[in-house]
Length: 422
Image (cartoon, rainbow, N blue to C red; front, side, top):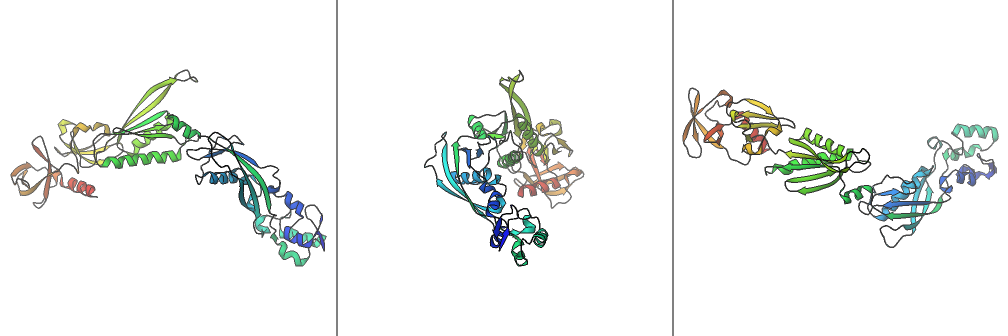
């Protein structure tokens, strides 16, 4: 029994209507894979990082491939620039068969790759999910048409309740590609940069490596969230004597990163510039910014002479912008800026220099009698309340500076000792 195509009205048999929902011509015309009169794309591949871009549209956007091999790049480019542009690509499974592949890769020369795209339809979907067939939006509309125009009998309703799968299509295509550096790799190879972050450390101690890793993690996190004209902001990281130089494409990013490091780490930042040439746009000079970041690998337990009138002062806590210290001379606590600490003023380094140990012998009126655990000599020392010595079973620790012993408060020693053990 003949029926009619719901789109063009052409007579078709019942089986075709059940399977395709329309005549073959209407189904083909509605499929974007059959509308491709020609299929050709041109791409450029960076030989260093293997990023690629579409030359047909002359876009500056470079795409990062999932895999670095050239064949995987071709496949990804075909999906990005051909298949993704098809109107009904979600209705098909696509298969790519390469029929002509170049034997060798030569930089600077275009290569031609021939391939065939096969579009194999998915299984039929329910009408409610697929949004209708051949201009019919719902099953109710099919039933109304069947009742009025006698297009479909009741027995065929079950098969019409599902959207027929679109026909399979095949298209021959070609891909032209050339090998050339992307902007980011070209700038890095040329050493281009507008700002430099100079990380430097003074005292050699094991904690330096940890501080470097923390700061490099800050820079890496910043680089993932910020770009310079679509490029990675860091052009190079170079090891130098006493630290590293981090070169950036943007002066603004150099300021942002140095500010972020200063907020999170105990550092001193000094900004300077160097004139590198004339600025033809503004009529001024082009400047390259330098951010000298001096790392302070100082930790709780280190002792400094910051102000000679206050005597030795021990670091209690290190924060990004402030360092809390306590005087071992009078017990007063205060906060100082990191740049107030000078490496030449470091007289005791926690975990490196040993402390002197004393055993409490007896308590006197405003003093205490201690016995040195090394030479067993007894010494009488002042015992202000802030030292926290309340029992003769307590082991007292002190450091020696200029022939004088400075006792470390008991609570301070316990907290710092547990910190370094952890």
